[in-house]
Length: 155
Image 1 (cartoon, helix red, strand yellow):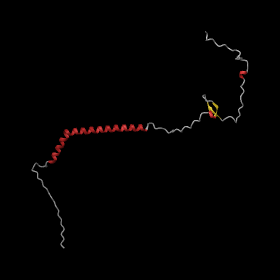
Image 2 (cartoon, helix red, strand yellow):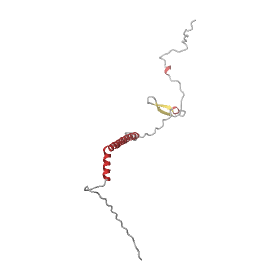
Image 3 (cartoon, one colour):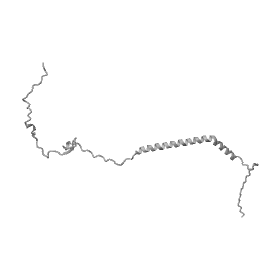
Image 4 (spheres, rainbow, N blue to C red):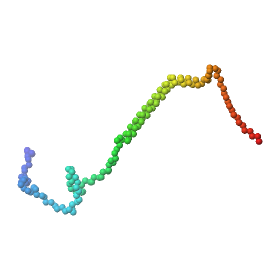
């Protein structure tokens, strides 16, 4: 059983290639196309940038006009970044100032507990004691002056 035999060739059915015959180059009979029967034609660019004709109903839809761009120059730094940077610098300066002020208050409290409180007590005692000049006995004189004016009408 030999099922794999090639099919017999029919050499009479297919014409042989004849390079000298001009039938291969003859144009096929074409139907006449009138200009009124043909639809509108548009020119579109192909893949290589050349303009080629194409029936209008097969052409791709026209590209929409793009929105005009805003060409105003942008700031060098983003305004939001500037706000964040300003807040960071201001917050840091505030923290440094508060820390310095708290340190000064603590240093002043430590100084008061040492010598300044004792000097304040000495000054308060000196102001409360009566003054004696010349080493003698001190005397206190209270002078009260009262003016009483009454109107009398005899009449």
